[in-house]
Amino acid sequence: MSQETMARVVDALYAECALGNWDKVAEMVTDDLEIVEAAGLPMEGTYRGKNALRDLFTKVFGMIDIAGVDIFDRCYGEDHVVALARMNFADPSLAPAELAEAFRFRGDQVCAIIPYYFDQAPVRAAAALKAG
Image (cartoon, rainbow, N blue to C red; front, side):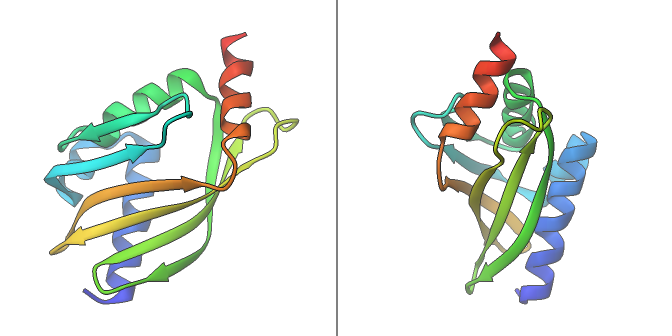
């Protein structure tokens, strides 16, 4: 798969998730999609299957008020793309979370997503703020 095609799929996946178009999201991922959120994060754990992103988003947005995610660069391999991103929180007093999200492809679908946070503290602070 070309870098341009992988970039289009990742961009579409971000966009459809933001809109909550879960049927479209399910078309872009494999039946055995696996997302692994690191220990120590409020949403830690492994999410699997066509509905993994929906399940993860439901959990995250229940715990954290996110204003948006900016992708500012990408790195490519033969069957993967790593999106370098910044998660911005609704409360502007919170520092954004910097992360790299690795998307692995099988054919033209995403089969794995593993986010790597530079620092988990902003995510935990956003969750604590919402929890009160």
